[in-house]
Amino acid sequence: WLHNYHRPTNLSRLNIFVAMGSTPADAPKATRRVSPSTNASSQTYILFVVTCLFVTMTGNFLHHRLADPHNVHKHAMRQFEMNHLGGHAKVEEQKKKKQSALKLQSAVLDTGEKPPPPVHDLAGLSCSDHGGPSDDLAKEMIYWSDIPSDDAFVSPIGANSKKRKYLTFEPDGGGFNNIRMSMETMIVMAHAMSRTLVMPPSQGMYLLRKGSGKKHFSFDDFYHLEQVGYEHAGLHVISMEEFLKTEAMTGNLFNKATGDVAFPPNNRTNW
Figure 1 (cartoon, rainbow, N blue to C red):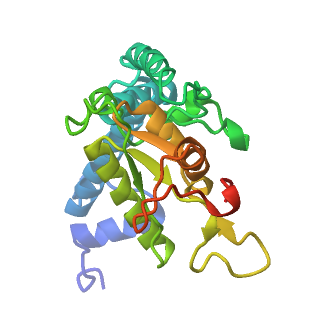
Figure 2 (figure 1 turned 180 degrees about the horizontal axis):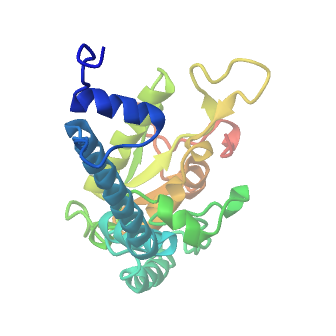
């Protein structure tokens, strides 16, 4: 019976002793091989940690150094002022001197009347009439440039004429865009010919006289044309009422057909 018994091999003995909870001294030791996927996962984890640290450090640096809200706002405000205002602050003193000179020039007009002080500064932006922000904040919304040389320009045509000449016109009969373009053309012509521009009186305008509200409008309802003329040395703008008082009521207008002196209907000047 003993001779017929099969002697277990080392592998069989290993299985037996493993099942019993022990391992023989001469049993071969098992070797554990590291899977390649495990190494790749470790490398990916390390790369992820390094990336998170880099992003965190970069964000802190940008926030505390380059992206500080106060510095960004101050820098943007300076850039906007230099790029879009054309050095508005630098010419402020020059503008005041120019306006003082214009006041003296306007005081010696034929009418002998000194015009009222300016209400708005066309080179700037004031929202005080509508309860808006301060002038310092409003300056950030200015997108145009102030060119003092344009304000001081006087056309050589008729500049030396001793007698004042006028340019009168009637508003276009179309929509407001046509009315605006024709008015702008008259302003350019008056400026080029050194003629005093006479603004038409209030009247009905196409598409603006519907409903129960106001039906008669003048350009003063939309533009500060008197201020435009006040701030430009080569442009003089007056109302129709002022023109009739200065020229018509003093006998300086004549009927082309008869040559007789012409007066306004019923001597009315306020139309």
